[in-house]
Structure formats: C-alpha cells, structure tokens
Image (cartoon, one colour):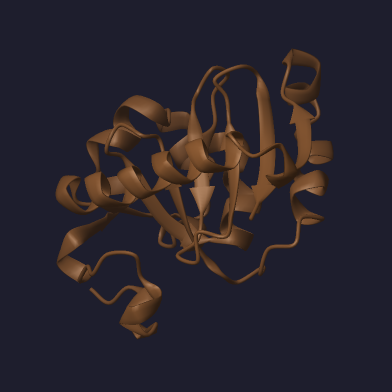
Length: 167
C-alpha cells in the first residue's frame, strides 16, 4: 500500500513513518469504537482511503507534538485567532461550522494530523477533514489538528468550542 503522503519530502514530517506505520481508518480498532458502523457505511470509500491511523509508536510522537503546541498557543492570547462555539445548536448546523473552517487560512490539499492526545492520530488532507469533521468529532472530545509546520492549530474542547490559533 502506498500512502499519498509518502511522496512528501521527509523533512516536512515531524516524525518519520512508512506505509507500514499506518492503516486505513476502516481497518482499525479506533473506527470500531469511535465511528459507528452506520456512519462508516455512509462515508465514501474514496474519503475513507484518505484517513490513515498512525501506529501507536508514531502516534505517541505526534500526540506529544500536538499537546506541546496546544499548550504554547493557549498560553499566548495573541495567538488566538478565532473561536467558534460547538454547542448542541451549532452542531445541528454542521454546514455553518464547515463554512467557518473553510475560511481559515489553511492549504486545502495540505496534509494535517488529527490527534486525540491519547495516542490516536489520523493523517489526512484538510479538504478531507472538511468533508468528514462531523463524523470524527463528538461533543467533549479534545482534538488537536495541525500540520508539520507547527505554526497553527485547531483545538477542539475540552469545552464545547473550537479554537483556531497560529503563531
């Protein structure tokens, strides 16, 4: 299996990983407890093929980077760029939140890491996240999204809000 990301220059990656270090999300234990079978069945195979879970070892390294970035950005009020509530009413209108995400200054085809901070990390592209975010997020989740530049992050939770911050 060849990941679409293996063609990237390895210097762009925060940690090195190979095709053997990830699995399509549909083949992971994470999918079975976080994404319902009904939701998985509804998602297109094309999009699912673009969601890859890193191995636990690689995920630990990426999660640590995400946690440090979250802490650094939240300690700097100047870094907080935009905040959006994710209460029950807002989650009923996921299109409005998707629109908000799409206006953020993030490369649409850029590779991102989506970390739950518990050694579960997905690698995907920003445009795939935009299409699937409401299938991957649950209220009270704490999730960090960032790229290898570590110059920005989207931070979900722990309260029902999402924050975009950049250095």
